[in-house]
Length: 146
View (tube, rainbow, N blue to C red):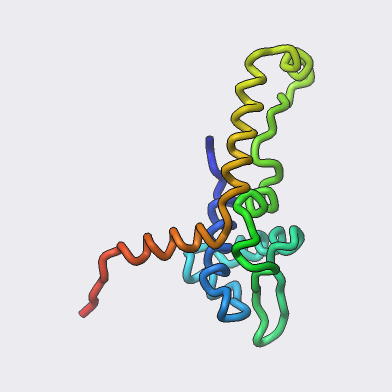
């Protein structure tokens, strides 16, 4: 399975908001610098996340983004669907194949895969991903510059 840059960056942005959940609004520039996401691209992602009701924004000098709900109430599935649409569509794109697929044992593979992915992504909350992020960051060696 290939994961798009849009999904990677969108999840990274949501993790950054989750890590700063208690700090209030976070500006796009701060998220961009912290996560290494181009600002213009990040603006597009944040708009999709806002439309999906996952983040809120406020304009102005003290503006920025916050999570629309607590991080423990936001699932990875919701984030990915806000950015990409359905996680795994099992219906073939080609009309001729679509009819054959209905009566094919092969379609059972895709249906089971879609169900398994949906179950896993629905169980993982943003809070969990933030905890994993903090754990990974704590394991990185400290860098000293002279």
